[in-house]
Image (cartoon, rainbow, N blue to C red):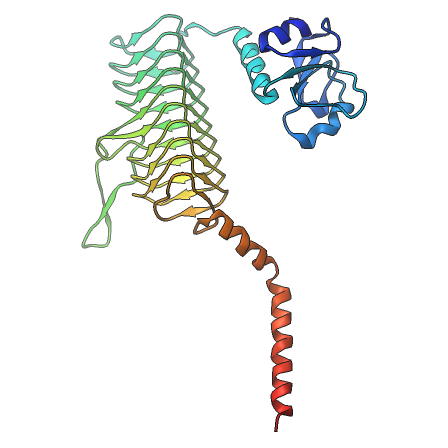
Length: 346
């Protein structure tokens, strides 16, 4: 389907600079832009591509001023990245939607299923589960006894949700993710082996949560592991038993949260961050990649390093670290001069 620049600008409440009748039928990256596509400039370091791209329409921020002539029609908006995301969402919604129960799925007769639900081949839904309206359960998904899934949620192939867990509205779980497996609970015995502690809690995931591929969110020992509204988790993330993650927190790949840690809201964690168990992370915290956090963190802190220290201290230390070889040579030279000076003294 073709869309004119005038229609796109009206949808995004943007300002057109160029041909309002320019048409596109697909999207592209600005550096790979092709005729008939729309791209966007969200990062200033890509500005050089504005003058090279072959894209027909380009979304830019309202304060963008080209330094020379450009060929695409511009649509100026408040936030180009956010506007482009809105267009992609609109495009996604326009794609054909899967519905219906496939004959090779297995659904217990006690399961309550809403309207316009899709259940793919070889998926299993166990006794007492509740599936809301417009839920999509792709092939080879397992839904355990008593699981509740809110309307509009999507479970991609291979997702497993163990018994009793509760999933909110409009959540997205990508392939291979497991919700509600046992937490890592073992008690050491006098024989130097470990006795398993039964994990009898559940997982509660609130609305608008998206979890990437091959993540694990463990059930609580007692009570609930809780992921609050709007949380976004990348691929390959471990959330241990009885953890709580606050609203709108985002975590990059390979982050690991140990048991009973409490994570505040609006936080941002880089890749491979490790959070110690039984600690509390405040709100609006930013933790750089590969940081290890061992103790409580106050609201608004920026941390980097392993073990993590305040962000500014880490970078000051990093500057010194990169100069250590040079500093060592200087120190050795000073030692030699000092020895020579001592020898020359009467």
